[in-house]
Length: 311
Image 1 (cartoon, rainbow, N blue to C red):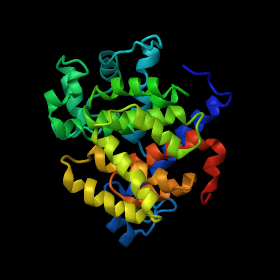
Image 2: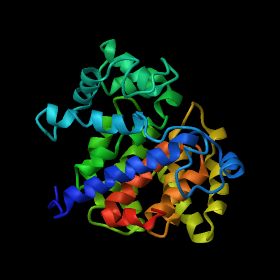
Image 3: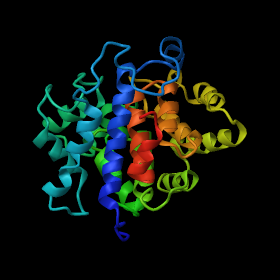
Image 4: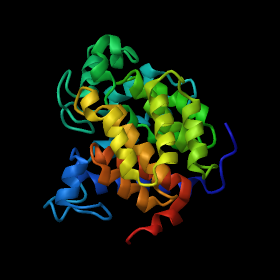
């Protein structure tokens, strides 16, 4: 592991704040399409919860899951040999079924609930989250990505370790492309403590997953479209055409939403507030995507970077 940066604690704090800001910014219109957002809210530049008659601060699985599952590390002696089975046991140790942390949507509907029921039945991770056990559609939903930020933040400057820990953690509930998406996010977050350039961070993220994977190809396409189109909306149209929700099954697939995260990073001009504006205006799983983007930008730009918005 590389040397811990002198401002490590502050950068982690900025990453956590960035995630929380992102989640609560996107949560009131989670699941909306870009078209509906533009028709009813316009471009997202600030909190809109009051317009929609919703509270701003609520218990949210995207935040609580990220911090809860990371408890596996201290609970097992902060060992770098931590196994998927131990992380799975941490789920059983901390979750209260149908009450805390997760969206308890039922077997075959909620990926995390499905994995929990597998664990409860004695099926250990990584089989608990495997495609073989749960099917590809269930195993490749978005949850592995949204819960992964903590694993990146405990590996400053060591994206390979972050990606490896992300694989172990994600495999409790997910498989396939969902794990690759989570590994990309964790690796970029680990490297963001030392590397401020988005393109370099994307190089890092792509380096930890197979070049044959769909997530790898998606990121390559996004980078190509960024070079061609100055307006993110043009790239968004390409995402809808090639990687849209109609191409993948389930409630909330990893692939379309990962694409929006990469798009926001590529078009944000190094601005925390612009990155969140783009990823939320684009729609789909807004709180999850915005949370990951906020964490990456928070780590990368630090607390000062959070000041570039309307506040």
